[in-house]
Amino acid sequence: MKVFIISHIGDADGITPIILTDLVFDDYDYYLCEACEIDQVVLERLNNNLFDEYDKVFITDLCFSEEVAKKINNSKYKNKITVLDHHINKQSLNKYSFVNVIDEVNGIKESGTSLYYRYLCNNYVNEILLKPSVQYFVNLVRLYDTWEWERLNIEEACNINILFENYGIDNFIKYYTNFFRKNNNFYFNQNELFLIDNENKKVNAYLEEHRDKVIFREIDGFRVGIVFAELYRSKLGNYLAKYYEDKVDFIIIINAGKSISYRSSKDVNVGLFAQKYGGNGHIHAAGSPLPSGLHDIIIDYIFKGDTNEDRENRSRILKH
Image (cartoon, rainbow, N blue to C red):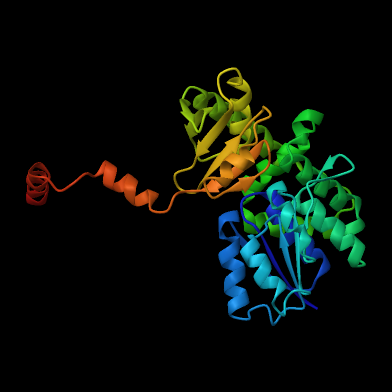
């Protein structure tokens, strides 16, 4: 059986399904993308019949648009594709047999990883999946992605994300596929504990540094705090949302090289706010892509027109 899996590139919840796939299937390929790219990724494969070589196609921690869902529903791949996602704004697509968007079960918040894990356990016999180490790890990923780790004070879930950010995608996948095959119980080794301790110190310093860099604005009737940052978006966003909860409705984190994140500690649905700007997400956590052409706008703004003064400066530079 040959499997293809498409998952979210942004965090451990999107990457862990690749690890689980490796534990279950001998023959598989995968593709990682941002949420804003999923329509294009799926359409390209539909239009070029690229799913033909696979027996099963999984899409985890992501879900496409209604337009793409309709196209799949009318295609020969309808019974080959299974979507397992937890982003509540896509629940209307559950009317299609191949889409499973589940936000929570019995009051417990789900993640892309937890949904995929349960699907695999229910449909494929595999001893490694049932190891306590795998079960524990899957729950840690779920706790971090749903941010329940903070309410329950389970620091290990946060530590998984620290390792993910430090190892990088390829090493994270390689390390844990080997770890689960060798270990029945989950643990952090001494090197990891040392790394986690140092990283936590850096994270705390980063949060405090950016606390005073927040720009306050009113957007679409909401009081927002905007900060430009590239690292620790979940921790930074939640930290700032709570620190400034009397001053803002939610926090916007702009990573000028990647995307925009939204975080709230109040009953403000940032997932709906993000949809207006081409994104999606949950009530308290969401994201959206950077506007097309933003980098050109930034460059043009910094390096303004070719004036006489510019030409004179260029002439002087060239002489030297």
